[in-house]
Length: 267
Image (tube, rainbow, N blue to C red; front, side, top):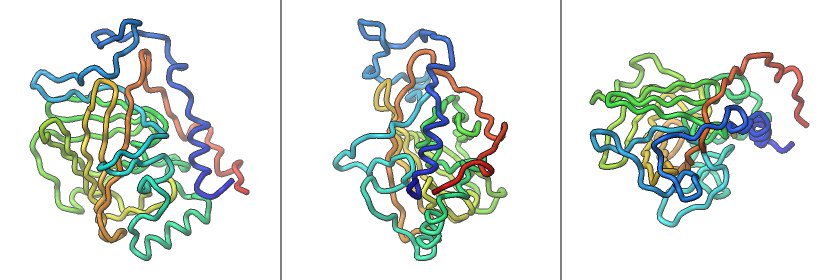
């Protein structure tokens, strides 16, 4: 198998369709077309205070097209810029990324049952669930049962290094019109940005801009500013689609009977 593709293949092989895991259930109170299907093109719902309601179960589209004037569309296994090419690495970061690829991504946190980066979590071909409240937004990721808290109570980001860096960092959010802007810092400096081993350091700050385009589409612009690893900030876009009736997260117990390091060999 070609370097860099192993983790994509494994994730896709292990990812069962969610609809096959739960009994069929038609959600109430959602817009529908004449044939009873969810009207994904209906207007996005709003909360009692008039803000867009991002709640729901979402999953990224692995294949999509770039839109003129918009950040390039990221794809699973590639943080990249939507086209073939390199990210704006610092020299040491480029060397480390190439080394990780040459080693067939054997230290990828996902394959070791460790938390993925925020970008990987958005791109992973497994669903996520958004739970929106006035003071916090919670994102539950099926992969590795990840749980993330975005504070919406007006607090500021803490200084780097305070508190102790977390796997998912420290996130605060605010509304800019109908766009949810989330800033995250205090991220661990030993993580992977993507499945091909692009590094992240403790200097990283992530900015995400969430827009619910309509009932069925959630658009995320993801910007990384990490001056230790990259020569400039860069932005990619993630296209999330609402899951159908009856969808729900399933158990993801990564360490249960974990035999990966013993049995998988890479040619």
